[in-house]
Amino acid sequence: MSEILLQIDGREVKAKEGTTILDAAQSAGISIPTLCHHQKLQPYAACRICTVEIDVRGRTSLAAACSYPVEDSLVVRTRSSKIDRTRKMILEELLAHAPDSVELQELALLYGADKGRFEKEASFCILCGLCVRYCAEIKKKDAIGFVDRGAKREISFVPRVASKECWNCKECFPLCPTSALQAAYVLAEALAFPDQRDFRPSSP
Ligand code: SF4
Ligand code: FES
Image (cartoon, rainbow, N blue to C red; front, side, top):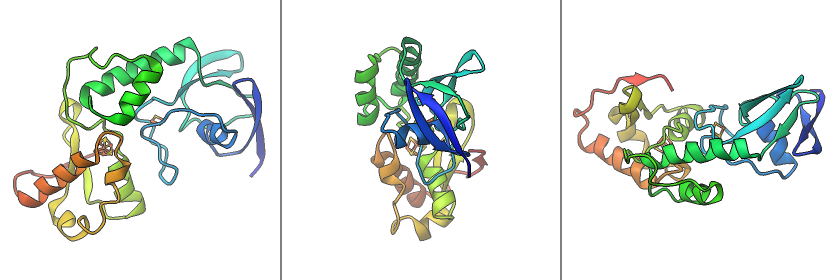
């Protein structure tokens, strides 16, 4: 794998071909916030909180650091007024869904996000997919998935699988950036009322 030289926040950083801006930044000790990223999982780029500015051949644009591959001579900025505004807006939208999330509140302080900007639609889930992808990619069980679409999209355990696998696992609970209790509640509901929900998965 060949080595690539890019610039992050004015510093020259070496990275391996095929890795991402986030990987390169982390290896150089440069912090970029993440919510849907997990180093053992495939990039998903759902939450966009890792948005950075990139200059490619004289053109500046925004990119998700967790999925954008490193390129030779790429110039990356991890903080600017535009990035901070973008992250603030993302956090305000996510906080409408999970107003009590400690992780979101800490980021909100950092970026000056207003928790009350959008009307609350507390589902306690920001659809980061960490629980769903961890179960599928690492545990290979597919005990949890997304159901419905649009505003109704949410996680749901598959009772038939969950009743065998989940109580002795629960490894997805601490991954949740909003509340481990939410996953516990949905799991308990799925096991207590296995026929209540017609599980029709929607794509991740
Ligand atoms: S329950 Fe938590 S980990 Fe699962 S998708 Fe929602 S926010 Fe992400
Ligand atoms: S951490 Fe990059 S999009 Fe969520």
